[in-house]
Length: 411
Image (tube, rainbow, N blue to C red; front, side):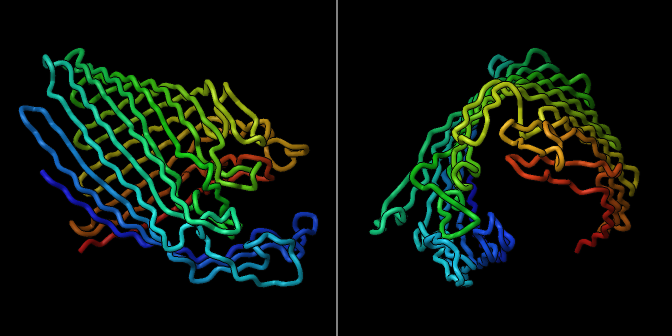
């Protein structure tokens, strides 16, 4: 069987931004900082894939490519000079050079080839799935770090393998082991930002992200309707890209994290009723920090919850259906580098407290082509916060109770 896919995406940005109020940074910005950007880019994706099956042996082979193209901005200006970053003065309007000046009219290519093999069941017990993928990103760019602005070339590439072994201990008990690697190249906004307050890029030093994972799980089918899964995992996330406070929000590989944990889940399904639940726990056992403003936390998960739990139900009766989803996350710890004097006047010092929320939805099929539904998000109106890292005066408050009515008519 042969498959072909093509996709053209057009990306439009129309931003009118205010970064600092008048007199910010102890008067360094007397008129604050404002920036306007209207720009666009496009990318073209293509994939060709074929599969072969012979005596329960299955092979999939494919090729894919993406080309990103940026031709400059429709409008880009600010009230300070973001081309040279000279000190603010009485001038209030500056026309700015391109937002992604490194690659104006220079396409950025990503290509990949991949193959996957699925074996038949060996002795009716063992099945093996193996795959390998080769990725390469390459492009020409203008080196803006020197006055001569020479044209240079750059590329990233990597081979990432994956293997999954499935062994049937019995008719209703299955053991799975998975090892794999994943590779992500920097995005255009992480790599090519220039002449702007929105982005800062280090094209010469930024590296791709690399994830290595190992999973071991047990699936137990207690009946045709009820099954349980237990999974343990180990993840090594290298060169994670984020904004570096130490480098004025430069997109940087700021840390590598090593995390292990376990998950347990259960599901029951009948003709009219379905329910599922899962619980996960993560433990940070090592990390390397490359940003001098971030304090290491080698033995505790920070900036994200370490415990997550979900419970969901779905009930259908004739034209009616009802669903509910409960979600819980435990407290989210800060790093010591997030804290500052008198911080407790604005937000909790050590962590953002955990919270629980419930979303419910009921619907009624009026006809085969029309349906009315009523949905309530955060039904309990729980006070929920998402942690803001680094030294800021706030955390992000999440939405309170929201009621949504919808009528859908299909043609």
